[in-house]
Length: 98
View 1 (spheres, helix red, strand yellow):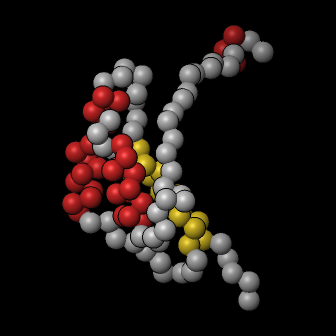
View 2 (cartoon, one colour):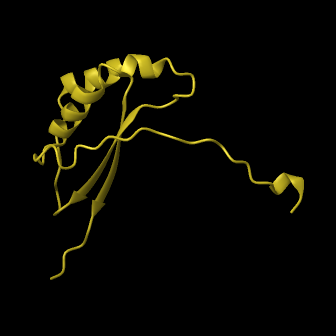
């Protein structure tokens, strides 16, 4: 391979916190609130670290049927925005067998 095809390695890292095993609710907002309760006091200092480019909550949602949804209140969305936290979803719907 020529120099134009060299692989470039970028440093990647992160801190991870899960609500799994701590929040029994199926309401996504309850999980988000739990996470915020545990990190909101430290987020301002984390934001001051030059290498921190993204703070987000990643939600993996496995649907159990069709036409499911959730509601996230505007007050919670405002709080996420105030803290500079992005909200990402991966949504899966596994087909059911007849």
